[in-house]
Amino acid sequence: MLEHGGRLLRAAQTYGMAPDAWLDLSTGISPFGWPVPPIPASVWQRLPEDDDGLMEVACAYYGAKHLLPVAGSQAAIQALPALRQASRIGVIAPGYKEHAHAWRRTGHVVETVPASVLLAEASRFDVIVLIHPNNPAGDRFERAALLACHASLAARGGWLLVDEAFMDATPDDSLCREAHREGLIVLRSVGKFFGLAGARAGFVAAHPTLLERLREQLGPWTLNGPARHVLTQALADRVWQSSAREWLHAASDSLAAVLSRHGLLPTGGSAFFQWWQDARAEHVHVALAKQGILTRLFNAPASLRFGLPADASALQRLDRALGTLNFKESSP
Image (cartoon, rainbow, N blue to C red; front, side, top):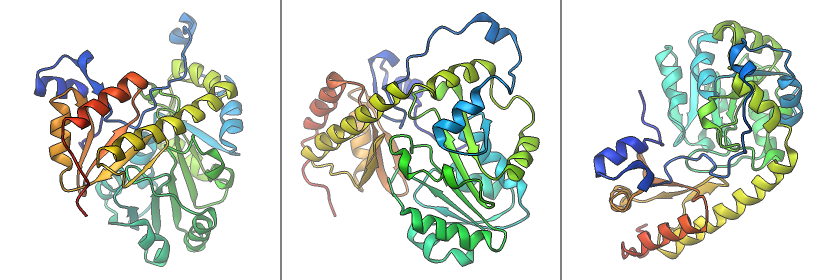
């Protein structure tokens, strides 16, 4: 099993601090979560039904013609490699490591390289996996370049797989509207933007033939009833969505300003997090953890990802903790 952020209970045990004493910045999950109303008892007592209105609302929200609900992007990441014979897979690096892991464990030949290499040398691969915006580096891509890459792959039966887990803050950049094309697959997650990571819910946008194959692979009831009930409302709440986007961009800018003021000039980032690459990442990670602030440490390359503080008080706490490090400019 690969390591992920959000291991708050383990950090609490390691550093001898109660979980509620921590400021957890180790994930890219928005702390500005959609306000979940009470769930009727009947939703818990019945099996999920496909004609409950969720798909119509989801297609309108994502601008996609065809969608398959899944138990988070992770379910699709693990299942999609089984739908191809042995292939040459190019995966963005650095990036979410579950992608390469899933393709390797299914017997494919996987190469992890920067996005610039993937886009320039698409002919070397049968499948290219990109994350847009990238996690943790924050890379962004021109729409024309992505569609050109897709066209090159699709012409010989290949796939372009785009993980858009962090796209909701910039929806106009999404490829969901184009995902009816054969060979283009877009993954969406509700956990990050809506703050509903515990629901383990997401969607796959793709050509209906591929979605049917994926449905057969995953089996029935890919999304539980309570999650479907909540998402039908959350995906339709355009007023809240607009407010959330404004909050995310402002909070991310404020976080970047605080990090920069203490010499941790962000190397990259998105509306959901800031990323700092530096050889001293582990030192800073441990120093902050000793003050009850949890960040996401990466070893290759040595770097830290900072999620968004939930409010001004949390941002001030991070500001004070960074000040104790006496940390000046980052090394080249």
